[in-house]
Length: 432
Image 1: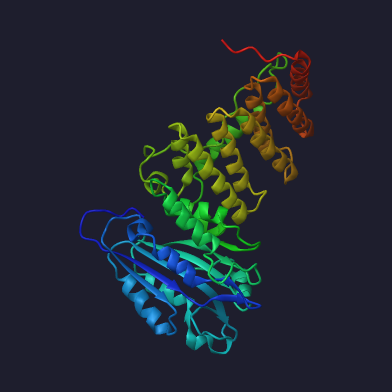
Image 2: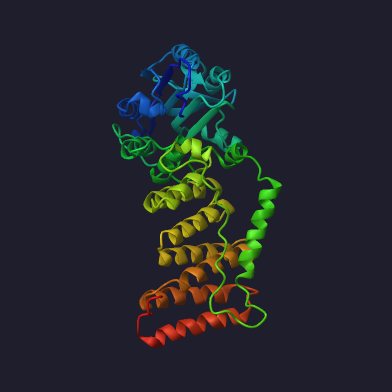
Protein backbone atom coordinates (compact mmCIF):
# COMPACT_ATOMS: atom_id res chain seq x y z
CA UNK A 1 0.00 0.00 0.00
CA UNK A 2 1.67 3.21 -1.14
CA UNK A 3 -0.78 5.81 0.06
CA UNK A 4 1.36 8.87 0.72
CA UNK A 5 -1.05 11.12 -1.12
CA UNK A 6 -1.86 14.78 -0.47
CA UNK A 7 -3.80 15.79 2.60
CA UNK A 8 -3.57 14.68 6.24
CA UNK A 9 -3.69 10.97 6.77
CA UNK A 10 -3.13 8.70 9.71
CA UNK A 11 -2.56 5.01 9.34
CA UNK A 12 -3.37 2.18 11.68
CA UNK A 13 -1.89 -1.25 12.37
CA UNK A 14 -4.00 -3.68 14.38
CA UNK A 15 -2.33 -6.94 15.38
CA UNK A 16 -4.55 -9.57 17.02
CA UNK A 17 -3.42 -12.86 18.53
CA UNK A 18 -6.23 -15.31 19.20
CA UNK A 19 -6.28 -18.75 20.75
CA UNK A 20 -3.43 -21.23 20.37
CA UNK A 21 -4.00 -24.12 17.95
CA UNK A 22 -3.19 -27.35 19.77
CA UNK A 23 -3.41 -30.99 18.75
CA UNK A 24 -2.61 -33.83 21.14
CA UNK A 25 -0.98 -31.31 23.50
CA UNK A 26 1.38 -30.16 20.75
CA UNK A 27 1.23 -26.48 19.74
CA UNK A 28 0.57 -26.15 16.02
CA UNK A 29 0.24 -22.38 15.86
CA UNK A 30 1.48 -19.95 18.49
CA UNK A 31 -0.22 -16.61 17.72
CA UNK A 32 1.51 -14.78 20.58
CA UNK A 33 4.90 -15.61 19.10
CA UNK A 34 3.72 -14.41 15.69
CA UNK A 35 2.43 -11.18 17.18
CA UNK A 36 5.63 -10.50 19.11
CA UNK A 37 7.74 -11.01 15.97
CA UNK A 38 5.52 -8.85 13.76
CA UNK A 39 5.36 -6.08 16.37
CA UNK A 40 9.15 -5.66 16.03
CA UNK A 41 8.74 -4.51 12.42
CA UNK A 42 8.30 -0.72 12.11
CA UNK A 43 4.74 0.28 11.31
CA UNK A 44 5.90 2.24 8.27
CA UNK A 45 7.42 -0.93 6.83
CA UNK A 46 4.32 -2.99 7.58
CA UNK A 47 2.09 -0.42 5.88
CA UNK A 48 4.47 0.59 3.11
CA UNK A 49 3.66 4.19 3.98
CA UNK A 50 5.35 7.01 5.88
CA UNK A 51 2.15 8.52 7.24
CA UNK A 52 1.89 8.78 11.04
CA UNK A 53 0.59 5.44 12.28
CA UNK A 54 -1.04 4.08 15.40
CA UNK A 55 -0.23 0.50 16.37
CA UNK A 56 -2.42 -1.63 18.62
CA UNK A 57 -1.60 -5.18 19.74
CA UNK A 58 -4.24 -7.46 21.25
CA UNK A 59 -2.81 -10.58 22.84
CA UNK A 60 -4.61 -12.80 25.31
CA UNK A 61 -7.93 -10.98 24.97
CA UNK A 62 -10.93 -12.98 26.21
CA UNK A 63 -13.79 -10.59 25.51
CA UNK A 64 -15.15 -10.53 21.92
CA UNK A 65 -16.53 -7.03 22.48
CA UNK A 66 -13.03 -5.73 23.19
CA UNK A 67 -11.89 -7.03 19.81
CA UNK A 68 -14.96 -5.51 18.15
CA UNK A 69 -14.22 -2.11 19.68
CA UNK A 70 -10.64 -2.23 18.41
CA UNK A 71 -11.79 -3.28 14.95
CA UNK A 72 -14.25 -0.40 14.88
CA UNK A 73 -11.60 2.08 15.92
CA UNK A 74 -9.14 0.75 13.34
CA UNK A 75 -11.75 0.89 10.57
CA UNK A 76 -12.28 4.59 11.35
CA UNK A 77 -8.66 5.42 10.51
CA UNK A 78 -8.58 7.84 7.53
CA UNK A 79 -5.37 6.43 6.12
CA UNK A 80 -3.98 2.98 5.30
CA UNK A 81 -4.95 0.09 7.55
CA UNK A 82 -3.35 -3.27 8.18
CA UNK A 83 -5.26 -5.85 10.23
CA UNK A 84 -3.32 -8.99 11.17
CA UNK A 85 -4.99 -11.98 12.77
CA UNK A 86 -3.28 -15.14 13.92
CA UNK A 87 -4.86 -17.98 15.84
CA UNK A 88 -7.44 -20.72 15.73
CA UNK A 89 -10.47 -20.65 13.49
CA UNK A 90 -13.42 -22.52 14.95
CA UNK A 91 -17.15 -22.89 14.33
CA UNK A 92 -20.48 -23.00 16.09
CA UNK A 93 -21.65 -26.59 15.54
CA UNK A 94 -25.30 -25.68 15.76
CA UNK A 95 -25.35 -22.51 13.67
CA UNK A 96 -22.49 -23.54 11.33
CA UNK A 97 -20.84 -20.12 11.58
CA UNK A 98 -17.12 -19.44 11.62
CA UNK A 99 -15.50 -17.78 14.64
CA UNK A 100 -12.06 -16.44 15.52
CA UNK A 101 -11.28 -18.17 18.80
CA UNK A 102 -9.93 -16.09 21.69
CA UNK A 103 -8.03 -17.18 24.76
CA UNK A 104 -10.41 -19.33 26.79
CA UNK A 105 -12.76 -20.18 23.92
CA UNK A 106 -14.28 -23.63 24.34
CA UNK A 107 -16.38 -25.73 21.98
CA UNK A 108 -19.43 -25.46 24.24
CA UNK A 109 -19.29 -21.64 24.47
CA UNK A 110 -18.08 -20.56 21.03
CA UNK A 111 -20.91 -18.07 20.49
CA UNK A 112 -20.09 -16.23 23.72
CA UNK A 113 -16.29 -16.43 23.91
CA UNK A 114 -15.14 -16.09 20.26
CA UNK A 115 -15.41 -13.40 17.61
CA UNK A 116 -17.92 -14.09 14.81
CA UNK A 117 -15.96 -13.99 11.57
CA UNK A 118 -18.47 -11.72 9.87
CA UNK A 119 -17.68 -8.98 12.39
CA UNK A 120 -14.38 -8.39 10.62
CA UNK A 121 -15.98 -7.80 7.25
CA UNK A 122 -18.82 -5.84 8.79
CA UNK A 123 -16.46 -3.27 10.28
CA UNK A 124 -14.29 -2.97 7.17
CA UNK A 125 -17.00 -2.81 4.52
CA UNK A 126 -17.40 0.99 4.73
CA UNK A 127 -13.73 1.72 4.08
CA UNK A 128 -12.70 2.98 0.63
CA UNK A 129 -11.16 0.39 -1.68
CA UNK A 130 -7.36 0.33 -1.74
CA UNK A 131 -6.84 1.46 1.85
CA UNK A 132 -7.19 -1.86 3.69
CA UNK A 133 -5.03 -4.96 3.87
CA UNK A 134 -5.96 -7.99 5.95
CA UNK A 135 -3.20 -10.47 6.72
CA UNK A 136 -4.18 -13.89 8.08
CA UNK A 137 -2.12 -16.68 9.61
CA UNK A 138 -4.68 -19.15 10.92
CA UNK A 139 -5.23 -22.80 11.75
CA UNK A 140 -8.70 -24.30 11.47
CA UNK A 141 -9.92 -26.83 13.99
CA UNK A 142 -12.06 -29.89 13.25
CA UNK A 143 -15.28 -27.89 13.50
CA UNK A 144 -14.20 -25.08 11.16
CA UNK A 145 -12.33 -27.04 8.49
CA UNK A 146 -15.41 -28.71 6.89
CA UNK A 147 -17.04 -25.30 6.48
CA UNK A 148 -13.95 -23.93 4.78
CA UNK A 149 -13.85 -26.91 2.46
CA UNK A 150 -17.48 -26.34 1.52
CA UNK A 151 -17.04 -22.64 0.80
CA UNK A 152 -13.54 -22.94 -0.63
CA UNK A 153 -12.62 -19.53 0.75
CA UNK A 154 -12.66 -17.24 3.78
CA UNK A 155 -14.42 -13.99 2.80
CA UNK A 156 -13.61 -10.76 4.59
CA UNK A 157 -14.64 -7.59 2.76
CA UNK A 158 -14.85 -6.76 -0.96
CA UNK A 159 -12.91 -3.53 -0.40
CA UNK A 160 -10.00 -5.18 1.41
CA UNK A 161 -6.96 -6.90 -0.03
CA UNK A 162 -6.76 -10.22 1.83
CA UNK A 163 -3.62 -12.34 1.97
CA UNK A 164 -2.89 -15.31 4.17
CA UNK A 165 -3.06 -19.00 4.88
CA UNK A 166 -5.35 -21.30 6.85
CA UNK A 167 -3.77 -24.60 7.84
CA UNK A 168 -5.95 -27.69 8.25
CA UNK A 169 -6.32 -29.55 11.55
CA UNK A 170 -3.73 -32.20 12.27
CA UNK A 171 -0.67 -30.63 10.65
CA UNK A 172 2.76 -31.06 12.23
CA UNK A 173 3.37 -28.92 15.30
CA UNK A 174 5.70 -25.97 15.06
CA UNK A 175 6.55 -25.59 18.75
CA UNK A 176 5.12 -23.54 21.61
CA UNK A 177 7.34 -20.50 21.01
CA UNK A 178 7.93 -20.83 17.29
CA UNK A 179 6.92 -18.20 14.78
CA UNK A 180 4.92 -19.85 12.02
CA UNK A 181 6.48 -20.27 8.61
CA UNK A 182 4.17 -17.86 6.77
CA UNK A 183 4.56 -14.98 9.22
CA UNK A 184 8.28 -15.60 9.55
CA UNK A 185 8.77 -15.50 5.78
CA UNK A 186 6.71 -12.32 5.50
CA UNK A 187 8.94 -10.63 8.11
CA UNK A 188 12.15 -11.97 6.55
CA UNK A 189 11.22 -10.61 3.14
CA UNK A 190 10.49 -7.17 4.63
CA UNK A 191 13.88 -7.13 6.33
CA UNK A 192 15.76 -8.55 3.36
CA UNK A 193 14.47 -6.33 0.58
CA UNK A 194 16.16 -2.93 0.11
CA UNK A 195 12.94 -1.65 -1.48
CA UNK A 196 9.70 -2.85 0.09
CA UNK A 197 7.92 -5.31 -2.22
CA UNK A 198 4.20 -4.96 -2.73
CA UNK A 199 1.89 -6.94 -0.49
CA UNK A 200 1.04 -9.38 -3.26
CA UNK A 201 4.74 -10.06 -3.85
CA UNK A 202 5.39 -10.49 -0.14
CA UNK A 203 2.50 -12.92 0.05
CA UNK A 204 3.73 -14.92 -2.93
CA UNK A 205 7.24 -15.20 -1.52
CA UNK A 206 5.98 -16.07 1.97
CA UNK A 207 3.46 -18.67 0.79
CA UNK A 208 6.04 -20.26 -1.49
CA UNK A 209 8.68 -20.60 1.23
CA UNK A 210 6.54 -21.25 4.31
CA UNK A 211 6.48 -25.04 4.07
CA UNK A 212 2.70 -25.16 4.30
CA UNK A 213 1.04 -28.49 5.08
CA UNK A 214 -0.84 -30.31 2.30
CA UNK A 215 -4.31 -28.94 1.75
CA UNK A 216 -3.68 -25.56 3.34
CA UNK A 217 -6.02 -22.82 2.13
CA UNK A 218 -4.05 -20.03 0.47
CA UNK A 219 -5.78 -16.66 0.13
CA UNK A 220 -6.66 -15.22 -2.29
CA UNK A 221 -8.07 -18.38 -3.82
CA UNK A 222 -7.99 -19.10 -7.54
CA UNK A 223 -11.54 -17.82 -7.97
CA UNK A 224 -10.86 -14.62 -6.04
CA UNK A 225 -7.62 -14.05 -7.91
CA UNK A 226 -9.48 -14.38 -11.18
CA UNK A 227 -12.12 -11.92 -10.02
CA UNK A 228 -9.41 -9.49 -9.00
CA UNK A 229 -7.56 -9.53 -12.30
CA UNK A 230 -10.73 -9.60 -14.41
CA UNK A 231 -11.40 -11.44 -17.67
CA UNK A 232 -8.96 -11.33 -20.55
CA UNK A 233 -10.13 -8.75 -23.13
CA UNK A 234 -11.11 -10.21 -26.47
CA UNK A 235 -8.36 -8.35 -28.33
CA UNK A 236 -5.71 -9.61 -25.89
CA UNK A 237 -7.02 -13.16 -26.21
CA UNK A 238 -6.84 -12.91 -30.02
CA UNK A 239 -3.24 -11.72 -29.76
CA UNK A 240 -2.51 -14.59 -27.38
CA UNK A 241 -3.93 -17.11 -29.85
CA UNK A 242 -1.91 -15.50 -32.66
CA UNK A 243 1.28 -15.89 -30.61
CA UNK A 244 0.56 -19.59 -30.15
CA UNK A 245 -0.10 -19.96 -33.88
CA UNK A 246 3.30 -18.41 -34.61
CA UNK A 247 4.96 -20.71 -32.09
CA UNK A 248 3.35 -23.78 -33.60
CA UNK A 249 4.44 -22.73 -37.10
CA UNK A 250 8.03 -22.41 -35.89
CA UNK A 251 8.10 -26.16 -35.32
CA UNK A 252 7.18 -26.89 -38.92
CA UNK A 253 9.75 -27.00 -41.72
CA UNK A 254 9.33 -24.59 -44.60
CA UNK A 255 7.88 -25.85 -47.84
CA UNK A 256 11.36 -26.06 -49.30
CA UNK A 257 12.57 -28.52 -46.65
CA UNK A 258 13.72 -28.62 -43.05
CA UNK A 259 15.29 -25.47 -41.62
CA UNK A 260 18.59 -25.65 -39.77
CA UNK A 261 17.35 -23.37 -36.99
CA UNK A 262 13.76 -22.79 -35.91
CA UNK A 263 12.30 -19.34 -35.96
CA UNK A 264 12.63 -17.78 -32.50
CA UNK A 265 9.37 -18.52 -30.68
CA UNK A 266 7.30 -15.59 -29.54
CA UNK A 267 7.01 -15.89 -25.74
CA UNK A 268 3.68 -15.93 -24.02
CA UNK A 269 2.55 -12.36 -23.48
CA UNK A 270 4.20 -10.53 -20.57
CA UNK A 271 2.81 -7.00 -20.25
CA UNK A 272 5.29 -4.17 -20.72
CA UNK A 273 6.24 -2.41 -17.47
CA UNK A 274 4.31 0.71 -16.57
CA UNK A 275 7.06 2.09 -14.36
CA UNK A 276 10.83 2.00 -14.27
CA UNK A 277 12.52 -0.64 -12.07
CA UNK A 278 13.01 0.54 -8.55
CA UNK A 279 9.67 2.30 -8.49
CA UNK A 280 6.72 1.14 -6.45
CA UNK A 281 6.00 -2.46 -7.50
CA UNK A 282 2.34 -2.15 -6.56
CA UNK A 283 1.92 0.85 -8.86
CA UNK A 284 3.97 -0.75 -11.63
CA UNK A 285 2.08 -4.01 -11.65
CA UNK A 286 -1.40 -2.98 -10.45
CA UNK A 287 -1.74 -6.34 -8.73
CA UNK A 288 -0.18 -8.26 -11.62
CA UNK A 289 3.48 -9.09 -10.87
CA UNK A 290 4.48 -9.81 -14.46
CA UNK A 291 5.17 -6.22 -15.57
CA UNK A 292 7.39 -5.62 -12.55
CA UNK A 293 9.26 -8.88 -13.07
CA UNK A 294 9.71 -8.08 -16.75
CA UNK A 295 11.02 -4.62 -15.83
CA UNK A 296 13.59 -6.18 -13.49
CA UNK A 297 14.83 -8.54 -16.20
CA UNK A 298 14.90 -5.80 -18.84
CA UNK A 299 17.11 -3.67 -16.58
CA UNK A 300 19.56 -6.52 -16.00
CA UNK A 301 18.35 -7.50 -12.52
CA UNK A 302 17.94 -11.10 -13.63
CA UNK A 303 18.45 -12.69 -10.21
CA UNK A 304 15.65 -10.70 -8.62
CA UNK A 305 13.35 -11.36 -11.55
CA UNK A 306 14.03 -15.10 -11.41
CA UNK A 307 13.45 -15.21 -7.64
CA UNK A 308 10.07 -13.48 -7.87
CA UNK A 309 8.97 -15.61 -10.82
CA UNK A 310 9.93 -18.79 -8.96
CA UNK A 311 7.93 -17.68 -5.92
CA UNK A 312 4.91 -16.90 -8.07
CA UNK A 313 5.16 -20.25 -9.81
CA UNK A 314 5.14 -22.02 -6.44
CA UNK A 315 2.20 -19.92 -5.32
CA UNK A 316 -0.02 -20.57 -8.34
CA UNK A 317 0.87 -24.25 -8.27
CA UNK A 318 -0.53 -24.38 -4.75
CA UNK A 319 -3.64 -22.40 -5.69
CA UNK A 320 -4.47 -23.70 -9.17
CA UNK A 321 -2.65 -27.04 -9.27
CA UNK A 322 0.72 -28.30 -10.49
CA UNK A 323 -0.51 -29.03 -14.01
CA UNK A 324 -2.78 -26.01 -14.37
CA UNK A 325 -2.56 -23.56 -17.24
CA UNK A 326 -1.60 -20.83 -14.76
CA UNK A 327 1.30 -22.87 -13.37
CA UNK A 328 2.47 -23.69 -16.90
CA UNK A 329 2.40 -20.03 -17.83
CA UNK A 330 4.71 -19.19 -14.95
CA UNK A 331 7.05 -22.05 -15.85
CA UNK A 332 7.26 -20.62 -19.35
CA UNK A 333 7.77 -17.09 -18.01
CA UNK A 334 10.71 -18.45 -16.00
CA UNK A 335 12.05 -20.06 -19.16
CA UNK A 336 11.94 -16.79 -21.04
CA UNK A 337 13.56 -14.97 -18.11
CA UNK A 338 16.41 -17.50 -18.26
CA UNK A 339 16.73 -16.81 -21.98
CA UNK A 340 16.90 -13.05 -21.30
CA UNK A 341 19.64 -13.72 -18.74
CA UNK A 342 21.61 -15.78 -21.28
CA UNK A 343 21.19 -19.05 -19.35
CA UNK A 344 20.15 -21.12 -22.35
CA UNK A 345 20.69 -24.45 -20.60
CA UNK A 346 18.19 -23.59 -17.86
CA UNK A 347 15.83 -22.00 -20.36
CA UNK A 348 15.83 -25.09 -22.57
CA UNK A 349 15.18 -27.37 -19.63
CA UNK A 350 12.34 -25.21 -18.33
CA UNK A 351 10.74 -25.22 -21.79
CA UNK A 352 11.12 -29.00 -21.98
CA UNK A 353 9.60 -29.42 -18.54
CA UNK A 354 6.61 -27.32 -19.54
CA UNK A 355 6.25 -29.35 -22.72
CA UNK A 356 6.24 -32.64 -20.79
CA UNK A 357 3.54 -31.42 -18.40
CA UNK A 358 1.40 -30.19 -21.27
CA UNK A 359 1.83 -33.50 -23.08
CA UNK A 360 0.57 -35.32 -20.00
CA UNK A 361 -2.47 -33.09 -19.65
CA UNK A 362 -5.73 -32.76 -21.58
CA UNK A 363 -5.18 -32.10 -25.24
CA UNK A 364 -1.75 -33.71 -25.24
CA UNK A 365 0.22 -32.32 -28.11
CA UNK A 366 -1.77 -29.16 -28.68
CA UNK A 367 -0.34 -25.79 -29.70
CA UNK A 368 0.86 -25.04 -26.16
CA UNK A 369 3.04 -28.15 -26.10
CA UNK A 370 4.40 -27.37 -29.56
CA UNK A 371 5.14 -23.80 -28.49
CA UNK A 372 7.07 -25.00 -25.44
CA UNK A 373 9.06 -27.39 -27.63
CA UNK A 374 9.84 -24.51 -29.99
CA UNK A 375 11.22 -22.52 -27.07
CA UNK A 376 13.41 -25.45 -26.04
CA UNK A 377 14.75 -25.92 -29.56
CA UNK A 378 15.58 -22.24 -29.94
CA UNK A 379 17.51 -22.14 -26.66
CA UNK A 380 19.30 -25.39 -27.56
CA UNK A 381 20.56 -23.87 -30.81
CA UNK A 382 22.12 -21.03 -28.79
CA UNK A 383 24.35 -23.33 -26.73
CA UNK A 384 28.06 -23.05 -27.52
CA UNK A 385 29.63 -25.86 -25.45
CA UNK A 386 29.68 -29.42 -26.69
CA UNK A 387 28.90 -31.04 -23.34
CA UNK A 388 25.83 -28.88 -22.81
CA UNK A 389 24.65 -29.29 -26.41
CA UNK A 390 24.83 -33.07 -26.16
CA UNK A 391 23.33 -33.35 -22.69
CA UNK A 392 20.37 -31.06 -23.43
CA UNK A 393 20.04 -32.42 -26.96
CA UNK A 394 19.46 -35.99 -25.78
CA UNK A 395 16.58 -34.81 -23.59
CA UNK A 396 15.22 -32.61 -26.34
CA UNK A 397 15.12 -35.39 -28.92
CA UNK A 398 13.15 -37.52 -26.45
CA UNK A 399 10.65 -34.69 -25.97
CA UNK A 400 10.26 -34.10 -29.70
CA UNK A 401 9.77 -37.83 -30.27
CA UNK A 402 6.84 -37.77 -27.85
CA UNK A 403 5.06 -34.92 -29.63
CA UNK A 404 2.13 -36.29 -31.64
CA UNK A 405 1.64 -34.75 -35.04
CA UNK A 406 5.13 -33.29 -35.24
CA UNK A 407 6.55 -33.23 -38.77
CA UNK A 408 9.11 -36.08 -38.79
CA UNK A 409 11.59 -33.98 -40.76
CA UNK A 410 11.90 -31.68 -37.77
CA UNK A 411 12.86 -34.54 -35.46
CA UNK A 412 15.34 -35.79 -38.08
CA UNK A 413 16.97 -32.36 -38.15
CA UNK A 414 17.40 -32.34 -34.36
CA UNK A 415 18.84 -35.86 -34.40
CA UNK A 416 21.27 -34.93 -37.16
CA UNK A 417 22.47 -31.86 -35.30
CA UNK A 418 22.90 -33.85 -32.09
CA UNK A 419 24.84 -36.58 -33.88
CA UNK A 420 27.16 -34.05 -35.48
CA UNK A 421 28.01 -32.59 -32.10
CA UNK A 422 28.44 -36.02 -30.51
CA UNK A 423 30.89 -37.06 -33.23
CA UNK A 424 32.79 -33.81 -33.40
CA UNK A 425 34.51 -34.08 -30.03
CA UNK A 426 35.35 -30.40 -30.36
CA UNK A 427 33.76 -27.31 -28.90
CA UNK A 428 31.69 -25.26 -31.25
CA UNK A 429 33.60 -22.29 -32.74
CA UNK A 430 32.63 -18.90 -31.35
CA UNK A 431 30.23 -16.88 -33.44
CA UNK A 432 31.73 -13.96 -35.33
